[in-house]
Amino acid sequence: MENEIICLDTSILIDFYRKQLKEKSTFYKLTKVYHLFAVSL
Image 1: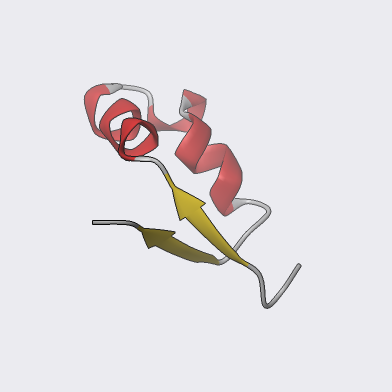
Image 2: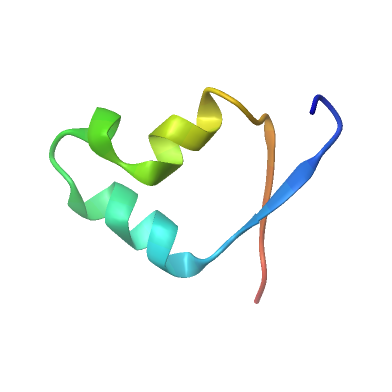
């Protein structure tokens, strides 16, 4: 999993920025497993 790139949907990022407790967001949990992320435009 070290070289995998995960493509994030913008809703994952919106959820992260809106939550006061970032630790409860899906993006925060994904950062514990994956290290490379991409967002499509």
